[in-house]
Image 1 (cartoon, each protein chain N blue to C red):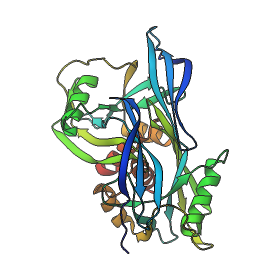
Image 2 (image 1 turned 90 degrees about the horizontal axis):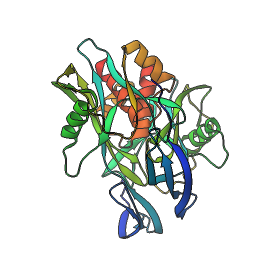
Image 3 (image 1 turned 45 degrees about the horizontal axis):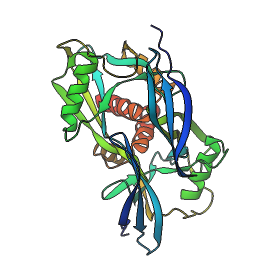
Length: 181
Length: 181
């Protein structure tokens, strides 16, 4: 079965709040010839998330508030990829900025569209094992956060209780646990 | 450590493409008193994704094109939650519409914000085991798709090769594999 891509015939900007958010209207042609006149396409910055694991096999997490989540949530290392930055470099930078840790054992857990229909940027997920302290933390995010060290059993329990409230964090953690076996 | 939420002081609409996309500008107060004048908030419909497993332990997937993914991608059952529909009901409906299957063994894998900063709706993830054929498929999505049955080993290999290109699908599959042990 041949499955063809949708074709973008033209695009016009409808909202510009760069670098945080841009919305475009795309005119599309489907494989069967149908035309979609006004398909919303959302551009937000790419980001990285990092599952940070200590030499003892514990997981470095945070408790914080995120604007899109009711109540406190558990979180992992993450942040936006800077303009033209390599995702791996962004992951190493965010790990060190948020925790003062560095790793010599990185696993690429993949890059994914956030919204399969409308884009919303791409998330690049990483596992960083054998993390060791190499510096202090730099707190420059808008959110307060508290560092937490969880054992694997504690992490799995929190994951299945839905305590990590944002879907890329859950994806990264579940992939990491599978990978670590 | 007390971690306080951001407070929304006011909101104004800046783009209305309901029901698919609305963007608002929120005026926010941070816990330390700082004011953010123009925080973009994205409203898209909630959706469900379902990991469908046969009585033999195989996984019901699709190969399809998604506009946000380059090339063909593997996919799982999913779709938007109708207005005021319960996510579990939406999951059962989408499973039957897309595959003709029904399950008597559902596990709720959690509900998650898509973008922790700007919203973009919530994803409700489910595992449906012991799925049995109860009807035909209804193809009413805009995308062509081809059904594929994958063994657990095939699914894990595809997952770690990044062949499921959209992050909620990866989250649901990795959580399901962990849950099934």
